[in-house]
Structure formats: structure tokens, C-alpha cells
Length: 458
Image (cartoon, rainbow, N blue to C red; front, side, top):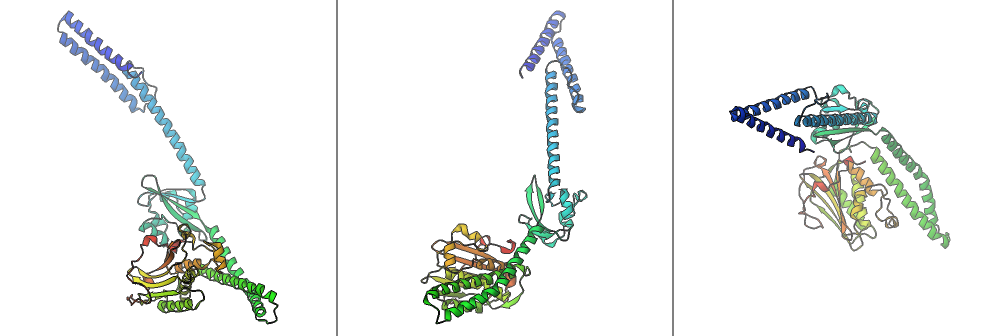
């Protein structure tokens, strides 16, 4: 079908040249006749080209002209192309309208930003939650949302991780903002109202704290009576083992309540811990002494001090971090094993590590270790008297000191927990000391990519 118009053009050209040659042979000057015929044929094509250009100039909305030969085909093809193009534009326009209608109905704030973080489009919720309107198009978003945390994160690398701010338009509303790559060099900023979740979390924390506090008093009374029964020489032998077991379980319940209260205090405290001087070296020596005196502790308890600096922080929380990590290591290390503590400093800050030769942790369980009540081996944890809250306390205490926790472990080969404190938490300048009861102190600081930054974890 596509070759027929061109065959028609070729036949017409041959006929015109043939007629011109015949006329030239009859009337003379055949070359002039051929040249004149070709010029006339060219003029005819130029005329139709002019008509085509004028038809295109008015948009091609009128039906195609009736034109002979190849020009009729050109008109028809262009008309169909224009029609399909208009249909595609209509469909795209309908899709854009539907998208905007759906985004307007969303409860989350939606803001489209260009590569320079200038506002290109906002939905209705962006006005309610962020105070942005259509009139703000072209304005840098950090000029309109002036929360210091938001501005700092936006200018330092973007909001690939969510950031929590107070709504600029509503005082009592908390927002979680995060941006995503969108289109060609654009970004989609999404603001979610998390006020209800925050209130629910506050209710949960209050309930846990109040319930734990109310349980402590009756549990203390029960513990006192059980201790009196255990010490009573007239207690029948058949009752002694059950009473001892009840005393053991009561002690475990008391430990859980104390850990819950500690965790509640950390969660409800100010975001940043105070900056009181803490003698870390003396604290480590005390923890080591207590660990050595406990029953069932490993035969080798090493302490290596490579730094004389202390920390600026809350002494009780730092002690809680160290004691929980050491207690965790002792719990899963056999008597013939080794638990080693190390304290050192470098250009990045201060670091404390606890390394053991215990049973190790499966790789898939490491990201969940700091969750409340999470247990890698439920049966073993209960039999050893653990509460499942120790590492959660460690996480929140480190979070309040701007620190991170790195965990390395291999099944059957032991585990290594490292706390990384920022440089501004050092109490004194760092000075290398002699190693004590430990291996060579020439160790590299772990890669920062392996550090879990608890600062942004809930």
C-alpha cells in the first residue's frame, strides 16, 4: 500500500517526460520541451507544498484537502498523526487531573520540589500541615519551613531518612517529613501527621511506668514473706523447693520491673543526657571486679585501658550501658571462655568494646537485638534469668549521649559489642596508656558504615 503513491509519481514523471520528448520531436527543440515540462511539474509540487504548509500553520484541525497523487497520502497521514497526538494529550491531561485530584484528597502533605528544592506544586494538605499554598511556587522550601533540624538536614544532603518536626501551621501537630526522587531531577516531599502515634506512644510509656511502679510495692511484700519462709527452720521439707522456686521467680519479676522503670525513665527523659564528668576507667575496674566475684564467670576477665579520658554524660546511664553489655557477655560465655573489655580514643571520639568467646548470635537476629523483650533463644534466656530489656536500655542510653552501637558476631565464635561516643563527649584529652591484662592495643577503629546510629531509631 505504501509503495503505490510513489509508483503513481514515477509513472506520471515518465509520462510527462515522454510527452515532452514527443512534442519536441514534432515541434522541434526537444530538450527545451523536457526542461519546461519538468519546471512546470516542479511548480505544481511547490504549489501543493505551499498549501500543505498553510494547512499545518492553522493547526491541521480542518479535514485534509483533496489533493492528487502523493499529496493526498501526505495530507491523510499527517491528519491521522495529529488526531492520535491530540488523543494522547487528552488522555495525559485526564491522568494528570486524576492524579491531582487523588493527591488533593490525601491526608498527607505532598510537595513537588525541583533540583534546587524550590516548590513546583503542593496539594491541599500541604497548606493545612505545612502552611504552603499555590502562591509559594518557585520559593525555596527551606525559606518557608524554618525548623532548624529540617533546614540542616535538607541542606546537608536531603531527607532520605525521615525527620520529625512540629507543624508550622498547627502547634499541636507533629509531622514526619521525608523526600523521594521524583521525575526528572525532581523530589517529592511527603509530610505525615504522626500526632496520634506520638500520643499513643506516650500512653504506652505512661502505662508501663505506672504499672511497673504499682507492681513494685506488692512484689516487695511477697518477696519479704518468701524470704522469711525460706529462713524458717520449721518449714516442711516438701515446701522448701517450691518456696525457693517462688523466690527465684519473684526476683526475676523484680528485675523485669526495675528494667522497665529504667527504660521508661530513659524514654521520657530529655533528648540529650547531661554532661557531668564520668570516670570510665574507674567504672570499668569496678565492673570487672564485680564480674570476677560472680559465680560462673569466665576464667579470663580482661580489661584494656588505652585512654585516660572520661566522658561527659549521666553516670548512672553510662554504668547501665557497661554493666548490661558485660552481663550479657558473661551470660553466654562458658566458664572456660574469655570476656575482654577495652576503652580507647581516636580522632572520631571514644570507644568501649566488650568481646566474648561465647555462643555467638545468628546474623539475621543482630538487627533486632535492641528490641524490647526480643530473645534469640527464648528457652535459654528464661533459664538464665534474663529480662530481655538490657540491650534496649543500652540503645536508649547511648541515644541520649549521641552514641552508636556496633555489633559483630558469629555462631560458635563469640560476639563483639562496641559503643562509639562522639568527640564532644570526651571529658579530657585522649592519652594512650599501657595495656592491662589484654592483647595488643594496636587495633583499627571500625568502619563507620557498620555503626548502628540509634539517634534516629524509635
